[in-house]
Image 1 (cartoon, rainbow, N blue to C red):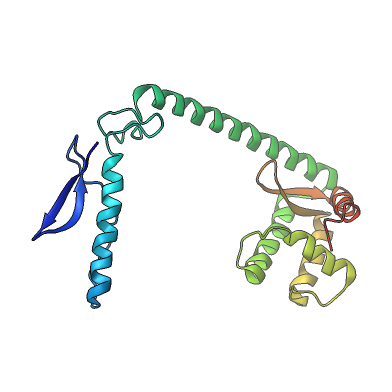
Image 2: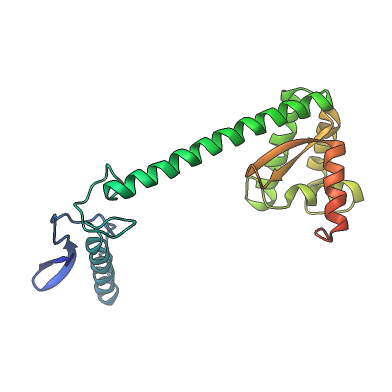
Length: 209
């Protein structure tokens, strides 16, 4: 759909959809600048974003068939919206099933270690705190392996010795360890034996330094 330019004194500032006349909210940030060249560049950049958005306004997001814009259908035609929602529902169901499975495994791990949920999460919170402090990330990829290596080798690694000592106390109290699980895309609690087997397996495969 051909966009309609919206101009003032010969300068195009935005575009409207040629079918429904809607002006897409693309680039509505302030464009003024004390630098004349920069000011013009911002106007042109904002107008171009409007043009691209206006071209797709009354077009199905998936099949590109012409239709009137509708936020209720996520700007999809009826057929594509039904397919999209079917995929969304399947994803939600899969997520719920995985979450339930993860909860079951967590309870099983607590039984195997003979610990409590509170003690397991005390260790988790401390590990998250250390990851955020060292890497500015709630759970940096491979963090649990780096931390374990520093503990086992008693070396001067990247982590604060006082924090390491606290982690040692916490993991001994709960007889477990937390690790990132790719299947659940989340951290899971393992018994120390399960964790040590995983760590040793990674060592044998050369995945750890």
